[in-house]
Length: 241
Image (cartoon, rainbow, N blue to C red; front, side, top):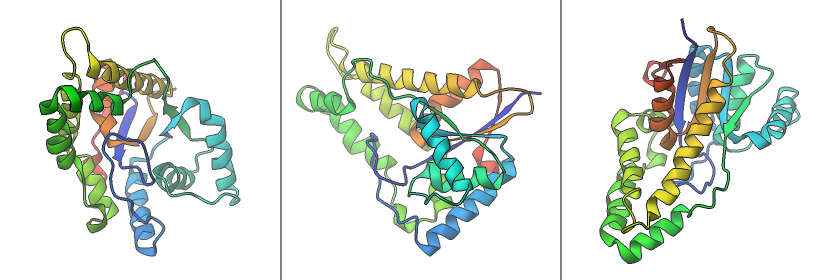
C-alpha cells in the first residue's frame, strides 16, 4: 500500500503572472459560492490527510497564521484558490495545518516575456505557434461555465498535453548555441522538481492522502515526477469531479 496523491489543477481565481491569462470570475457571488461549496464537498470524498497549495515555502508561516485565524473566525478569505478551496476544505477535514510546496527562486534565467519578445523578433513562426495556436486552445470562457465544469476542463488529459506541448515549443526558441527558450524552460522544470520534492517530503506513512491544489499547467510534470518516483499512487481527479 502506497500513500495517495490527488492533483486538482486550477485556474488562478485572482490575477496572476501566468503564461496563459484567463478571465476574472466573481467567486464571491452567491451563485459562485454555491459552486465552490459543491466542489469542496466532492473533494472531501477523497478524505485528504494533508492539503498542499501553490504558495512558496518561505511564506509557510504566514500561510498557517492566516489559516489559524480563519479557523478562529478572525480572517476574511480573499478570492484565490488557496483560500476558497484549500482553507475551506482543510477546515471541513479538521486539519490544523496547510502545506506550502511552491518555489519561485531566481536562477538568473530569462523571463517568459523576454523569451517571447525574442521569438517575436527572431522566430516569428514559433512565436505565432505559441500565441495564435496554443494559447487560444488553452483559454476558457470562464463566465459561461460552472466552477466544476471549469475544473473538469482544466484537468482533461488532452488539454494537459496541449499545455505541455506549448512548453516544448518554447524550448525550441533560439538559434545555434543561444538557447533562449530553454533558459526559461529549465527554470520551469526546476520549479516543478522542487514542488515534487516538497510533496514527497510530506509523506509520513502509507496512509497519507495528499491533495495538491495547483495551477493546471503544472499537472503534466508533477504527475510525471510522482509516477517515476514510484513512491505514491496517483488518483485521478475525474473520480471526484
